[in-house]
Length: 63
Image (cartoon, rainbow, N blue to C red; front, side):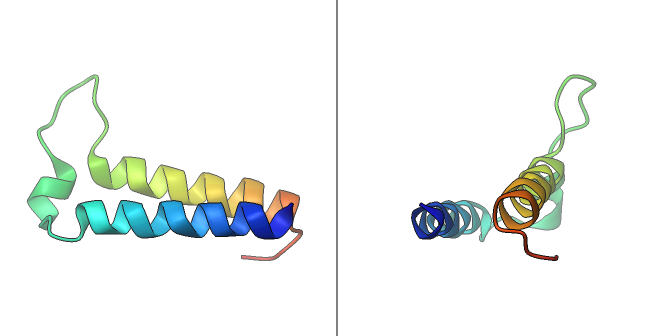
């Protein structure tokens, strides 16, 4: 189960990076809207949850 989860998460990471690789800094920040987080923040938020819940909690690894 753990290897399948790792493979799925690595695939999701590759796909996410492929989607944003051509964006510049301004595009990653996007427009300032009170109800929308910048894309850069959303990517970081996703990375944090992966690191915390998958690497630390599920696999017992240190960051």
